[in-house]
Length: 424
Image (cartoon, rainbow, N blue to C red; front, top):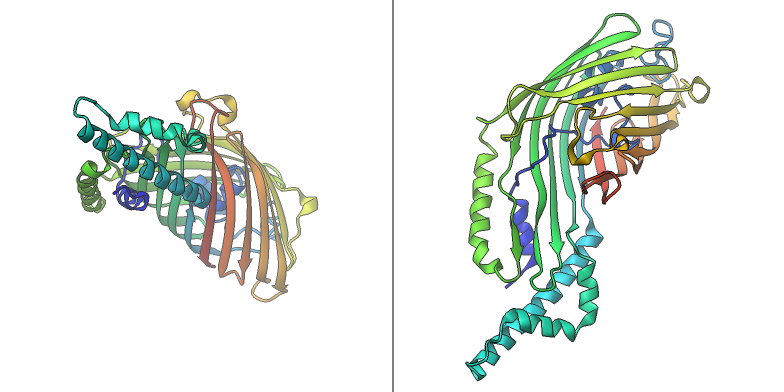
């Protein structure tokens, strides 16, 4: 019997080939909420992912005496976090499940009707498809619901990060996976399938060196394992016959994900220049791989950008505040999907405000901090809110859009993610 939860349960165990030539991209909730414009912001652990040169800023922030050009925020000698995040379109899944259940019932009735008609009159070639069409004609409300599921995607994301950053050094171990099943409400035979599903396991580390007080360079290395197998689809007529094949694929995927003979190695490079006390310029060339990743040649990610942190809006007291305004030209070497100019433009801003603190204790102990952010990533709006308590636990909610069509602005995939972080 057709069961959507059963299909999705099997699908979750299976990785599928990713045809894009992009390397691994860490989904930083802080960066994504401000449009993913971060190559010149990088004042914390996010430097590991966006620009290793930013690690040179840790231990300098807030130190007006020695580094007046960089001090706006309480000094952060160490940034260590464990993050767990996920995103799932719950409402869309509920609607799709209800529609799939109704269509399965309708298809089963049509199959029974066709069988009964053939038994009653062997000279009549009654097909299930014809009976299904006749049944749909009696239920026009289902046709309207079917039409709303023309390759309807349901993106799900899961991430787990362990991160450590100190002055001039940082490293991370992280796993990022995205599953995008889809529903095609075909009038004849509706089916479900997989548009995208990948799992990246990454270990990376690097450092920075300050050539001057204003100029730093960064370098990092990484090892990446990407697990994948072939894309597939399942319709209501052949579900029973394909279950064994899906189970076989799931077993293969579980076995191969722990085989590391196909690990790809790469490097990241970055530079950061403090132009004035308020403005920084940054550039990074990430995902420079020496071999193929998952049998695909990876295009390096070249990004250049700027960050402006106006002195007027910032304060460095116990109740500190910081405003960042940033813009990047991202992924400059990638022209997939008929990229337009705005596909590469990321822009955003963030405001961090300490709401409750112990002044003077342990360099101003933050008890409660609020972060608000917004921007545009590749032409689509982004937004986020984060709350940090006792510098130990932080909860973030963020949304952004990704292009799933063939050109910028054709078909937005809106993603909503929640993340919980522990550390200091």
